[in-house]
Image (tube, rainbow, N blue to C red; front, side, top):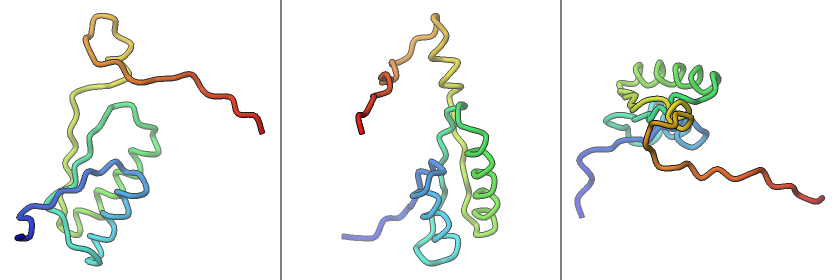
Length: 97
């Protein structure tokens, strides 16, 4: 089996994908042609700050970060005239300790 010709990272800006991006930027693992961040438009401000930091590191290492979006998932979910697949939201569970 031959090696893949393209490598892309699905960058959610969480622990795992951030670690992979940082390791690739340091040359400790093979690099990526691009890291793709699917922006819901409803991430906490801290996530966007962290993403900006990652983008700077990735750019210095020659890894392009591509931000893709089709809108704001929160606004779409609250708009009664917008057709969308329902998000699986459940009420919080109460745990007895």
